[in-house]
Structures are given as structure tokens and as C-alpha cells.
Amino acid sequence: MHTRYLGRTGIRVSPLTLGTMTFGDTTDADTAVAMTRSAVEHGINLLDTANVYNHGASERILGRALQDLGPDVRDRLVVATKCHGNMFKAQHGDNPLLAKLDPNRWGNSRRQVIEQCHASLKRLDVDYIDLYQIHRPHNECATDETLRALDDLVRAGKVRYIGCSTFAAWQVVESLWLSERHGLNRYVTEQPPYHLLDRRIERELVPMAQTYGLGLLPWSPLAGGLLSGKYRRGKDIPKDARYAGGEGRGGTMLQNDKALDAVEGLAQLADDKGCTLDALALAWVAQQPGVSSAIMGPRTPEQLASNLKALDVQITDADRERIDTLCPPGRMMVPYYEASFGPHRWR
Image 1 (cartoon, rainbow, N blue to C red):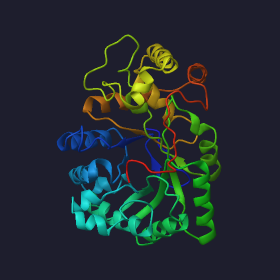
Image 2: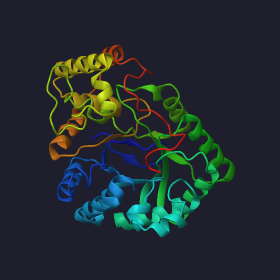
Image 3: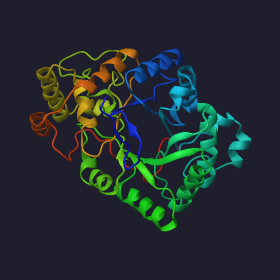
Image 4: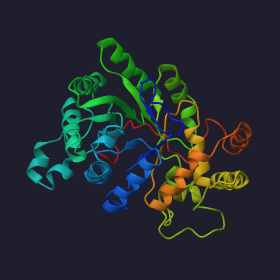
């Protein structure tokens, strides 16, 4: 396992991360615990979750998996979670009185950041969080307020590093400038969507991250499964596939000839290399400039086993030339990179 540094920090992480968004939803607890153990046994040392994943269930199940692994193993892992989304129902249920009294149920305020950190520590059943990330921007909240709260958590020993997710390049740079100005801990990572069908972060975000020493932790490197090999022109889609009904971004892709052509070309390249399409797509993201680790999102042990094969795939210069022809640098076929500036589903 060739590990790499997490941004400009002194800790090293595996090139693939186990993402746990399915834990507590399409992946039941027992299966999730077993998958976590399997990932760790294969050398994966970065585990990523968020408070909003299945209303806290993902964090609770990951906490159970950490207990199953034992304290010695946990202390050698990098556990990452996030805050920003609305966790009111998960914490208080459908209490109408509390709902009326508390409009501050989401966002990046000092109140929310500290409250949600404590809640995540409890659900994960850990003493500290290795990487605590702001899940989305909150433009109505002063950035220095968020950074001060995060800095206090680091100084209190509850958080070791801080990061952000799906921020625009200018928002990351503003945060870095404010950290410098006020002497606060700075973001060390940014977690953007990035895959072969949407390469727009290469225009500004990647050069910014390389310039200022942030590690990139791309989410959805398989485009929500579009690059898993399930969705091929002229072939039946498995009934349990995410986009079997043709909805969402997947439905858009299934009507997009350019995207379908790209998938077919990538599948041929994978065949030529003797690997699966998902392994090729994951390996490409993990080996892109500026990337510290690519986040897998398997929902079954079989998918995890297939994803892990990316560790054995080497992307050559010839492969890159062929890929760039199919999926031009800096371009997009299926939209994912949309830094949040307005209301969204977590509010």
C-alpha cells in the first residue's frame, strides 16, 4: 500500500477511503461492521462519514465498527465526519414546540458546529475526531465565526484537523486568509465531487489546493455508480441499481449520448488493461494530481471487494491520453460540482 500525506499535514493515509453514507440505509449494521473490518484489513486507514448520513445512523454504526476493531486499531485510523446539515429530527424527533423555538437547526454557526461535534463524538463513541469537516458553505454565516469554533475544538483536543466539503475555490481561499489573519487552525482538506464524467474542479480548485497545500478527498469517484459498469448502452440495468428507475443524475446520463459514449470507451480501456471499470475509474481519481485519497461508497461486500482492486491498477501516460480523449480535462458530461450557495436538502 503506497500511502500519501493528507495535504500538508504530517499524517499519511491510504489512497482509497471507506465512505459510509450507505451505513444504516442500504447497508445494514452487521454488514457494515464486517465491511469496515475488511477495508481496514486491506490497509484502508481513512474512514469518512457525516452526521446527516441516515440521520446519525452511519456514525453510530461506524462507532460500533470501531469498537469491534478495538482501541489499538482505532488509534491508528483516521476517522472523518462532517457537520452543517439539519439534525433536529434525529436529536429531538417531531416535537412541534421545539421546532418553533429553534430556527438554528443547520448551518455553520458557532452554536451548530460545537453542538454537532459533541453529538458526533457521542454517536461515534470516540474521544476525538481526526478530521472534522464543514459539509457545505453557509454564506449567511461569517466565515471567521465558523473557523473560531473549529479552532476551539482543536485546542480542546476534540478535533485534530479540520476540512471543508464542496466549497468553491474562492471560499477555501477566503477561509485560509481568515485563519492566517486571526491565527486560527486552517483547513487541511477539501472534499469535492470528482470523477471522469465531471472534471471541472481541475480548472480552479485543484490548482488552488496544490498551491496552498490542501489534500483533496474526492467524493463520488464512480459518479454515483455511473462508472461502476452497471449502466451500459444496450444492456439491462440491475433492478437494485441506484438509477434503475431513471431518476436523478443517473437518468440524465442514461439519456446523454456523450456520457454513454465515454462509458463505453472507458469500459474498453478497462478490458484492455484487464481490470473492471470501477477499478479503473477509482484508480484514475486516486492518482490525479493533488488527490490525497478517493472516497469509495460501496453498499455491499462484493462492491467493496471490486473497488479495492483499484489499488492494483496503475494509470499510465498512455492511459491518460486515451482517457483525456474520452473525457476532456476540465469538462463535464454529468453535473456534480455545484458548490452550495443557496437552500438545499439538508436545511
